Length: 169
Ligand code: S3P
Figure 1 (cartoon, rainbow, N blue to C red):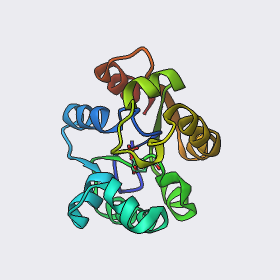
Figure 2 (figure 1 turned 90 degrees about the vertical axis):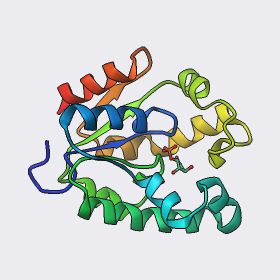
Figure 3 (figure 1 turned 45 degrees about the horizontal axis):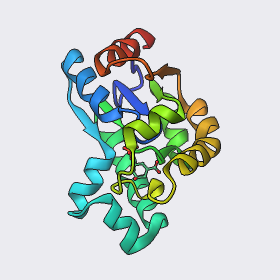
Figure 4 (figure 1 turned 60 degrees about the horizontal axis):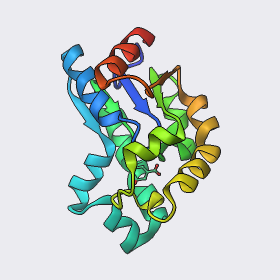
């Protein structure tokens, strides 16, 4: 758990892996608040993430995300979940270094089962299986760089994953 101030635990990992579901369970078990930077962005912007991507492009979304992550890391002391691409930012990865970070992971078949053809996730809108694999190729080392532990989710319920996260801390 965190000794450096900031969130008690930060969840990272690819979209659809269950960060929000597991994060909410974890927060309840720990008796702390749950926060999610995707939700912060949607609330601040007053529109869905897919719309931000379409209207202003990914670079603009990444800038909003960078700011949302910075604010959350400074303000939040509970469980924090980051969007799947937040680790792309060098500054974000550096800020995560002193914090307890757990990466949730799953295999590609499980990813497609969970995310499916969900158009709310603009980066998987064309060919989900291939795009998910490409994203993981590009990001696997970034997740590994920031994570103190990697917790597999494939054959586990969200409650079991939450317990595995607690065990890993
Ligand atoms: C993204 C993941 C999404 C959201 C956006 C981009 C990504 O968050 O931030 O669609 O680049 O992996 P979730 O991981 O919460 O789905």
